[in-house]
Image 1 (cartoon, protein in one colour):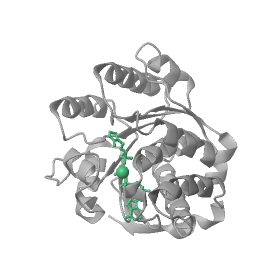
Image 2 (cartoon, rainbow, N blue to C red):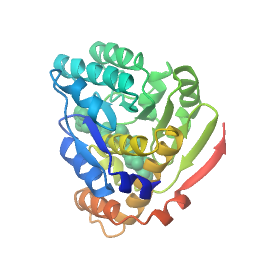
Image 3 (cartoon, rainbow, N blue to C red):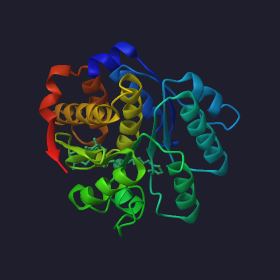
Image 4 (cartoon, protein in one colour):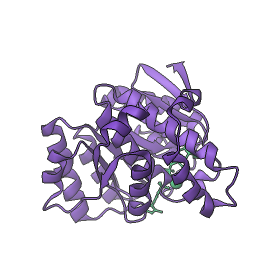
Length: 258
Ligand SMILES: Nc1ncnc2c1ncn2[C@@H]1O[C@H](COP(=O)(O)OP(=O)(O)O)[C@@H](O)[C@H]1O
Ligand SMILES: Cc1ncsc1CCOP(=O)(O)O
Ligand SMILES: [Mg+2]
């Protein structure tokens, strides 16, 4: 799947936050995709028609940006392009809660969040307060399965061991590094990479999601040993993604039953 994605070099429209824009674009370029950070309401819908996939992340939301997100998601649906939702800290304020409901109504193909975000989206009490998780992936697995069944989306919960399900298939993805949650925008960049795989494998969004998670698991594990801390890990991770050997990825994935 990695080779297929690299060969396709998909154009991915990433509506992500101010914090993540630069790092996420570098992650996509390193992995072999072509990112474009296009969010203005005047053009987001038009661009979504020509891009191969769309990712929407509400990390630094404003009224203008939300308008662009909704226009892009509608256009992606009309054009038959897959889109991915990253509901960053959606539980924190009324503005975010309303925004995420509007976006969910447009039926994203993939939803990716940390454990607290996914639990809250499924209506379960969570310990999340801001953008970082306060719950473990294990605590979120049942909520993720229910969310996948009620929305029809593939749902990915990230953390020490990731969990992904489409409601009937499920997998856990191992690897990564404890330094990853200490680098901002890692999760946001991963969401953008899911868009690249969704563009390359639109007929199987579960496999696309697993592939993106496996890339992060493998690259994280490879980047960690030589890193002096979160700073050097961040750039070593980008190098590891660029050097990733597709043959190494399957070892990260454990197929499980739901
Ligand atoms: N403790 C950990 N050990 C290994 N990998 C981790 C750990 N925490 C997060 N990751 C990895 O970091 C990436 C981002 O996940 P996460 O930190 O949950 O997202 P977010 O930034 O949205 O909170 C994922 O690839 C995940 O597997
Ligand atoms: C710090 C911060 N504040 C608003 S969005 C954002 C980035 C969050 O990135 P991630 O969820 O990938 O850690
Ligand atoms: Mg994070």
